Length: 83
Image (cartoon, rainbow, N blue to C red):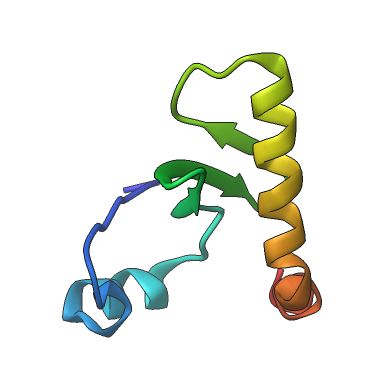
């Protein structure tokens, strides 16, 4: 298997996650981000790519990604070390 998707709260503590973690490495994450009183699904890849799972105006997409990037800043060095 070259890819797997696991969803849900507390997924990193599951037996299934542990098995996949031993077999490979994470190349992307889909996160829920709250802005404008709405949840937005955003995928972030190892190489820094960002995917929005909804249609947005160009202005809203740029504002959302900028806000999301800012929220992740405190964690950026930790992620960079692991990858």
